[in-house]
Image (cartoon, rainbow, N blue to C red; front, side, top):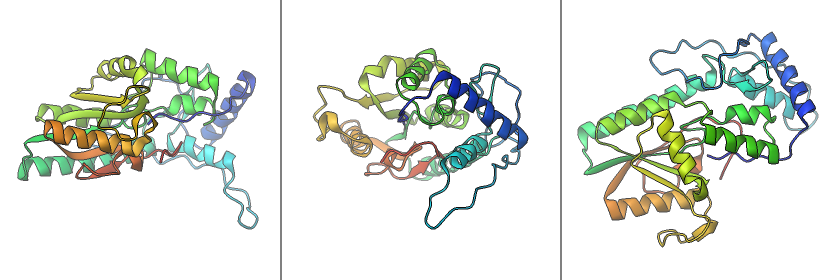
Length: 283
């Protein structure tokens, strides 16, 4: 799901923050050697999962005071085993707890899909995949901009999409490839707006994803199957698109997979599988 980016920090401040976070994570045992920005996540069968780095201890809270924001950001970076390269850009570290949790969820999704195909044999079996933080990870830009952002972060996000430098979520790619090879339609339904259709298609195919359908939210001229028109939020857009494909194409969505509950809520899929995403929430 497309990340929501807010007020930007200065370049100097971002670099200082990146250095500070790198030092904190390095002290907790995070790998600091840069290996590039397009690492693949480990698979469920081959990854040896290292213990997650221990984030700094929380400070004493008073009354009903929420958790400290800086501590939460440090925990998120530790969850991704995040590290910075020589230029101060963030990357997902090897054997992160995030990757292990993704592999576990995708493993469950594959087992359910295999069981359904073996015992129920839908006429036109299909799965729905979200894109951002389901098929690719936007962690690098989110972390670069301290999980905030603004115009600079939005531009960096758009550039990462166009250049196809966001890391693929490897277990999702593996599942999509397996499903397509077994006659299952692989349909992407994303909250991105449809002015990004070409960029998005190139991004997915460049990573090796099979695409049997790609649906983005309309900025104008919405199709008649969307009663909410151009004002659709994630849940009604995705569920109404699944409904349309079920009724017009005979698709049976065995499962819908995303990093947000809104990716699979609203019906017209048999089961939803949520991937971890501690960076933002889209209702």
